[in-house]
Image (cartoon, rainbow, N blue to C red; front, side, top):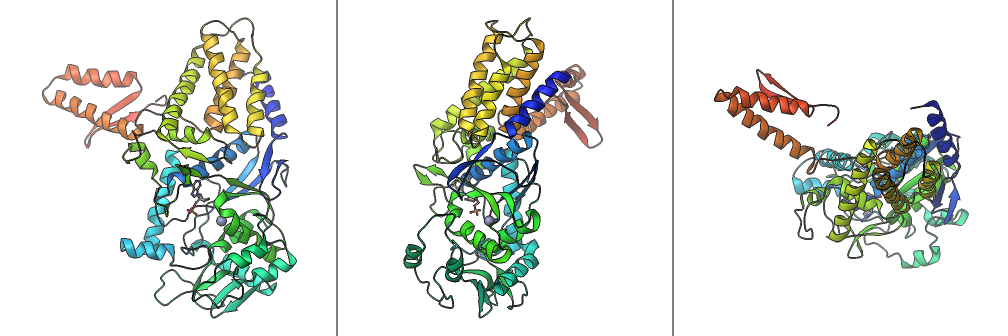
Amino acid sequence: MSQSLINYICNEVLIMSSKLKIYNTLTRKTEAFEPITKGYVGLYVCGPTVYSNAHLGNARTYISFDIIYRYFLHLGFKVRYVRNITDAGHLEGDLDEGEDKFAKRAKLEQVEPMEIVQKYTVDFHQILSDFNTLPPSIEPTATGHIIEQIEMTQRIIENGYAYVTDGTVYFDVEKFAKAHNYTVLSNRNLDELLNNTRTLGGQDEKKGRLDFALWIKAKPEHLMKWSSPWGVGFPGWHIECSAMSTKYLGPEFDIHGGGMDLIPTHHTNEIAQNIACNHAQPAKIWMHTNMLTVNGQKMSKSLGNSFLPHELFSGNHPILDKGYSPMSVRFFMLQAHYRSTLDFSNEALQAAEKGLGRLFQAAELLTKIQAGSKSTFGVSEYAEKLYAAMNEDFNTPVLIAHLFEGVKLINQLDENKASLTLEDKHAFENIFNSFLFDILGLKSEVAGGAEKVDELMQLILQIRGEAKARKDFASSDQIRDRLKSIGIEIKDGKEGTSFQMGRNN
Ligand code: AMP
Ligand code: ZN
């Protein structure tokens, strides 16, 4: 790349990073992004509760934050992205009622709770890797931070905002609400909440209806439990995020995120805990992703309308007409803004599949286009449009519309109806590819994915093996040479024949 091109891109990025605006749930406004420390971003996103397979709705939330993470990286920020794994302490109801999710599942599958945690953590990572999301910088677990959660609970008690009843520690919401705005995030009316929240059978050790547990006394048969100053128990769900965000990002950091459904309880309680412990509202910006819906209803396990990513990839589900590749699904998700609901439909997925194919074809075509003697359109004006879309609260649908304008330009270049000088062509290619591949995180995929390639290769190797067995060396050599010419090297060894993909494949 020429020095002037590098300077141009660096300048562009520098200017653009100062124009980023983000919608803040806390202020209900779109605000100019000002990092606490210049050049750095601290980002905390609530991770999954690993007691069952992550469904497509969960994936939408993590794909949305992946775009946000990727865009910050592209703008040159040094990002510490913390996304936890909830592997303890999540009861079925948000209000500390019901069975422990892990214990219930462990009983059902007749395994240890930690085997449930392991199984579904692996599943979660696999799904996110299928969708080409980048791993976070730190992925702390609740069970790995029991001490931090106990310490935070202790400090909240010392500060007068929590009380102990028979081995369980409750956060005193009414007392907190006298000094602070407990519903600052949800903007709900506290009195209405107090009046509407039902009293829970067997939970009368709570002083107030909205009080929630920081530490829960374990019944003797409970397996995941730890010693604490209040006896043997386990942490509540909300305290883990307060403890882990404070530990890795400090008491005040840039952005806290999660799905919108977390606003009224989990995030509201996180803010209260942080203020009660650290005397500081933790995040400057609270970002919330909207829900993936099916026929207008939130996709959720409990409603029975959820399906799993692998069902979508294989097409093996009654509501699906056929299977869709992970990148088509990712692209389908990016066609809606992260704060809008997105309704699942076969038609929208098919359209996404086609649209993505057009973008990839254009990117491929662009590599083959010859430079001209002059430029007939402005690359920096085009780049500015792409940045402007992302700077407007990560507006991926507008960005995608501009990428399709790029497809038109590429076709015009191909048909000699437009031209770019060599330097401009490189700049255009750089911009187009950066947004398509690095920021939107889309990657070319072989139809059916790596598994299919593997199956096909096994078939080819078997046919070659059979040719060799009948001493048809001409055919077996031809297969080897043809594969080599497309960058696939096969090796005959003692343990059989293996293959290796070349760099370009
Ligand atoms: P959970 O494992 O239930 O704690 O959920 C993990 C994340 O997925 C949370 O941030 C939820 O807000 C989010 N989530 C759950 N259902 C959906 C949905 N239908 N669409 C988008 N995000 C969702
Ligand atoms: Zn959380």
